[in-house]
Length: 302
Ligand code: TA6
Image 1 (tube, rainbow, N blue to C red):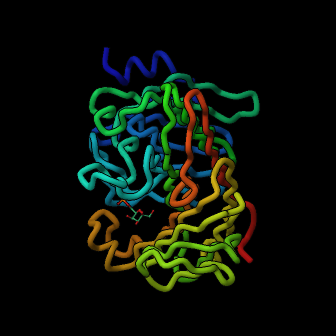
Image 2: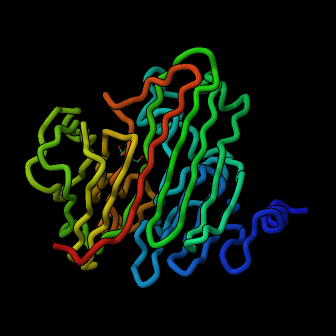
């Protein structure tokens, strides 16, 4: 029996959850009274999320590739077990391998309140262990409703400690990045990656006039994307994270990446819930760390 048939017979929920092929990828399609979403099993990667009555909240490039072993431009890429370039080995993939390898669907449930919850576990094998020789179990739980919740949990199942860097590298849809701002990071220090990693302090809301790539430190678990063009604010709340990455590639970098499309950068901003830079997590043997992000549209802008 095909993988799709097996998934539909094991986990399908009539009228709420079915499985379909998108390009090379097997995906879960959630449709509920509150929202619709698509999640690729590769990377346990939320590709789309659109609450009822709203424009899409999660951005997915029109030029995204859906290929085995390749990252998807948009959605909620899971960066794990390191964020950014590998500390010692430039041959290893940026942002870790979790987003480009298979994850197993462990469970799918229609909750009494109408939300749909999917539990995924990363499939570790010799290829992943060659990059990450630590015994660990990582799960990603995605709950789809009027709010989207993504919960990334890592357990150190070995007998030695390890350092964990990670991020939910979420791409949000905005009407026009030149008018959008990010509130809630005022006064935070940040590392400015477009200025050699210089340490600076945020004055007022984050506005966008050029390539912006910053790791905000000691963040407080709550920020918002104020979007006058779509007349909405997207609230982002998080736990288990004290660093927030804000990124827009702007024109030149987006063109170089090749999967943003013409002007794609104008309609997206990444606000990433992370354990990055000095916020990486030291996980002792037997310890578990959970990082959670919740997203919802809360109000008109302003
Ligand atoms: O989170 C921002 C960032 O680290 C940028 O520096 C840029 O590299 C972006 O991630 C996208 O990375 P990717 O590997 O998905 O193309």
